[in-house]
Image 1 (cartoon, one colour):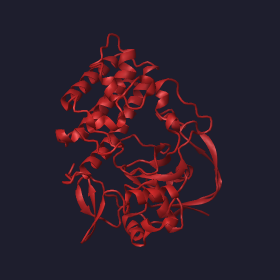
Image 2 (cartoon, rainbow, N blue to C red; image 1 turned 30 degrees about the horizontal axis):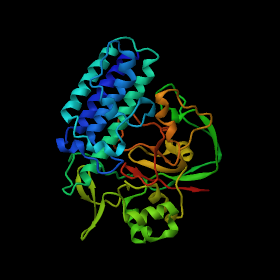
Image 3 (cartoon, helix red, strand yellow; image 1 turned 30 degrees about the vertical axis):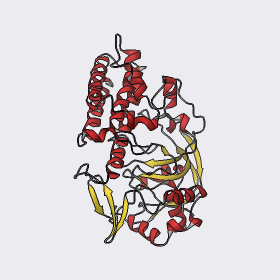
Image 4 (cartoon, helix red, strand yellow; image 1 turned 45 degrees about the horizontal axis):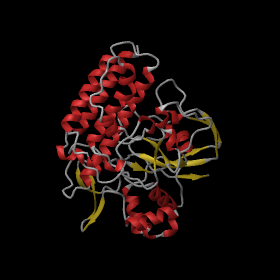
Length: 387
């Protein structure tokens, strides 16, 4: 029963990655403006390398790599899998060409279908599931990286004029009250999850309230107009240093014209809608805004406890929680153990999903994580308070 759905999910996922790239010009595939943004063609190659390295080489008898050199080019951070191109140099890869990478994808996809013609063993199935969800993660990164590439082009070209990016929530900005108590946190079903969502465990939470609505762009303009970016008392020391060093005055993609604030979106440059949810903010900014409001960010546990009572999934929501292992967490053996565990330091947890998240990829226990200064993802915030 599992074989056909996984086969089809594999095919659909591979196809959707390429659909995301269809609006691009060839020149767009090779740009790397900053270290956190990878060229689209690197994403195409890396997701392909994952299936080749973790499934085809060890499990498909007689398989020959498409090109032995590609492992060096498209490995990302797997130290145990050998040497790799330095992350900052991904934009220097004029070769392999975009055409060659699409040929590589086709070659690996066809080989994977040969592998999946047979019964998917209990050994292969979890690796295949991780590979599919890994590619879905890169679909989201593709969209946000494409937005950064185009949004920092002086022409600010349109990616897709039909792309719906602006989120206006219709429900009132009231508070959801949660009583103090012991709650279960983490993934518990037999469906797929990442290792960092386990094991399921108990936490005690004091009474708190969490906003039903995300913070809006109109509220953020009030924060700016009240000198929020110039008031050191609202910021962590690291956040204040970041603001000063980078001359931060507004969320990413905002600019002020004579007629008011505008923002770049994947469908083009538009005027700010004060009722729309704010996005592309760092943890530092989210914390400072909460301080300005006399409130705070929820912990990731508070967010998970309350999530069934509010709408989520259109913005990654910063939490006050450090990205740490759950009690009794055990990092998986082998190279796949590098997938999550080794990043559990100096990062903040985000919960929910975003408009760029692949279909059927989000779940209430999903733990995204980024360094506090990053904001090129579709990030937002929901306020909380102790009661």
